[in-house]
Image (cartoon, helix red, strand yellow):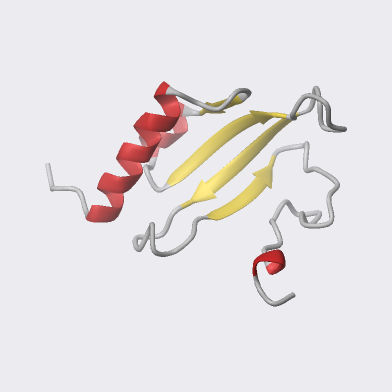
Length: 101
């Protein structure tokens, strides 16, 4: 078996941490991650006390080989794409709030 790159080692470490102690309402699709370490499917329940309470979301995280120096691409997938000013109708998350905009 080939050795893992620094990026893969970091992803493996973060994945194990997330699976062992996930935030409330968050689960990792271990079967999908097992197929491809650089693409995660995360299941997330809407937070209590918000208009998203009771709603189930799926997010796809795509990590490039320069992670953690390059941010992952995070997209809402499946039927429940939240209506939010920073989420496009195709599920892509607008990150302009992190720049001068």
